[in-house]
Image (cartoon, rainbow over all chains, first blue to last red; front, side, top):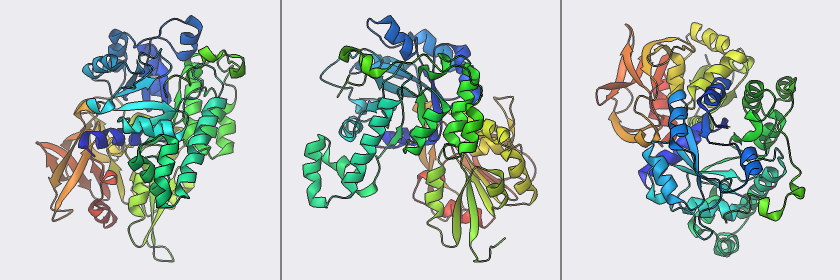
Length: 292
Length: 194
């Protein structure tokens, strides 16, 4: 494996046990950093607002990304549309630390995801199941996150995806080696990666939870289900008290297995973000089904 | 120092970052019991402590909020070996050149955060560190800091392109790079002999 890819996977390892927060301004980025975020995702609009606004959602204005980069010392990530490798080239030219090839933005290509091996900068990609995760890793992703259903404040899809990935990983570890090619065919995933997962019982990259996490309890639940860390999109800056919510979620991710601490940090946070029953969304409004 | 069963209790500060990686390395060493440490009592029970790589701002805030800073300072008073890798080194430093914050402030070094730039400037190299090993050691630098200056009593262990990247002061060890990300455990053996 090439050295650059190893370094990129290593950066993702340093983020483990941490919270990555969506921010739209330098002021929000500073709040996130002060609250203990391990990285920020620089955006023009958080997913809840993208949902509300409709239309085509694209990469953010480089000006916003540069301002956010200048405001904080933690890594800065930004999103590109699925398949939009020129947006990715632009972010790499800006010296971004991580690119999220994200279903939250409107896909630019319905056939092909970005060939991430073409880039020096690391990528994180969303996945609903193991096959999808391994296809993205096969394309060069250095980090995986569940897709969940972003901008809903509803954790149900993130749970579904995390449980699915874990169950499929566990199943691979029970197979004989001569059954792995058939498993690769079934998962529609590269054979060498299927073999790696079967041998190690985990993905070859870090796996975070994302999409719908709105409270410290949501974040801790994802950690107890085996997430390496958590992305919080709209959940912080669409809540009533972003500073408090940010800090509480950070603490909940470190002490995810300590209910007394979870109880303490969950107290008096004010209202969580406005949330949506995903079953009431139209099929066309679901982000998780974007990409494959 | 030694426990009843003769094993050494070595903790990894488990707020966030490369915790698992350090634990896995410690598990390779005979006579070591690797422990996740994220509360005061566990910290105070240790024979040695590793502060892992991660984000120093995040770890630095949590050790204050949960009273872990005092426990680590107490370990230092007892001269228990403490080793910081990357973010851990920043947390141990008495001075941070490009930040007004000081976290533990236990080691007489001044460090520069993100000294090499963004992730695009992360790199891997080989270092010759005679005090630690007779062979070259692989060193992985991820958005790494380096040491700009050291005080009296701090021994410089390694430099890379003129910058100090590893140092020791009595019971304290600091590396700008991540031995937890490579296969070589010589740094662990060196640390456990402090």
